[in-house]
Picture 1: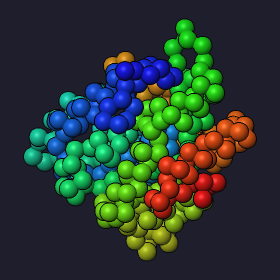
Picture 2 (picture 1 turned 45 degrees about the vertical axis):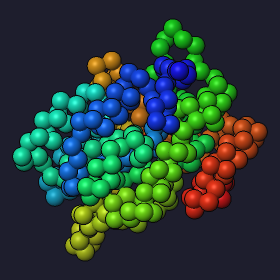
Picture 3 (picture 1 turned 30 degrees about the horizontal axis):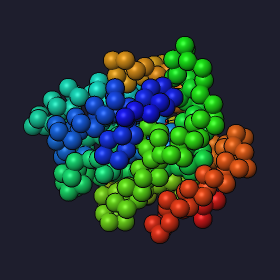
Picture 4 (picture 1 turned 60 degrees about the vertical axis):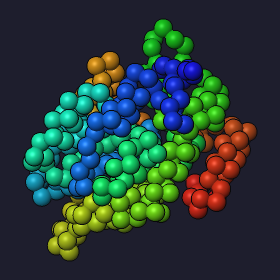
Length: 309
Ligand code: A3P
């Protein structure tokens, strides 16, 4: 049974809410056809948790010896076009051909929104690496609400924050319930720390240098002393910063082709890029409710977000 959410009805599949036109097809494709390789690296996020930012960071970190910063591909390629989105229909032929070819580029980089529980077990056991980014639920709600309203068909009135809030709290959001999505990767990071790196958007904002170095180490590309002295870590952070990326022509006017039906203006992926913008939208009452749900959902997991501590 579908539930209306922002742009289309979502359906519940194995405990998670997915859009039938893209996410569900993507999950089924991955479950039935995707062949992971031990060297694969996945950026796994919920929507609006920093996928764009970390795509750029991972791409720039992995390829730093191939490009100079003044002619870097990220200056003219949208972060989402730098490596494939595992669950996007548009990449499925590409994925099939690359997973059967004898010499795929290694490591292969992918982004995905698929919850950990919905991934085929072979991905967890074959040695693949996952970088999971999560974000304070209140910021996720506000960011998602504003983003989805931009994509909402013109003939429909914008969805109110109240409606979005109610559904989000019930767990109805793309790849939601949000908390379950986060918890899947959180638990996996505790169980398989060498394979799952768990980072909070807020922590990256607070201590970018520390977390980028940790990310590079996890990706198997630690920064050398020489690189650190030369300021390579800072260069990558500057290249991938909100101010830099959002002001590039490709991100102001470019369009991401997500599937044959879904096109998204690159500029929609850059709004404010700040921590705590929920304060400008949510009432005291909704904050209280959402914090309570977060506290309840995360209870006993060891994971906390800001005011749910
Ligand atoms: P806001 O709507 O709060 O501004 P995703 O990439 O997963 O769709 O997430 C989008 C969110 O990340 C948006 O949040 C967007 O502004 C923010 N964002 C995009 N690029 C960023 C960057 N380079 N640094 C920090 N935040 C960024």
